[in-house]
Image (cartoon, rainbow, N blue to C red):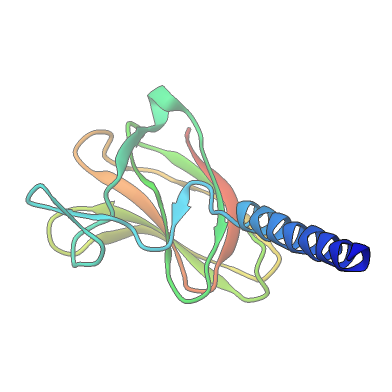
Length: 159
């Protein structure tokens, strides 16, 4: 009987250790400031997929300061969780942590098709910083899109 209890005790310790480490891995893998499937907004309804732009909240780069992000995806594009406003010039810094070249776009949100205000390709394992000028401070909102297979960190800030 003591042997059975000892074996069961060891089994439960192993199971608890397994579940504890699985949750730790999950917590370390969360995206910060980025989402794979942005929420879309249309006529006061929230949809998971559609032809409209990502919509969560607005981030005023002048009032709220630098927006920092990091995250990764395999089969989907990554988008910033916020649309940006308040700055006519921004600096974007992106570190490509993946093993492939990625494309980063700053898109202007508008009715119809969103227009790219800036597009950069970043080689695997490299970082890139660039400035984008002549943005509308209040008439339009902007957001970042990262290509499929991205693993990135960085920020966008007003300059």
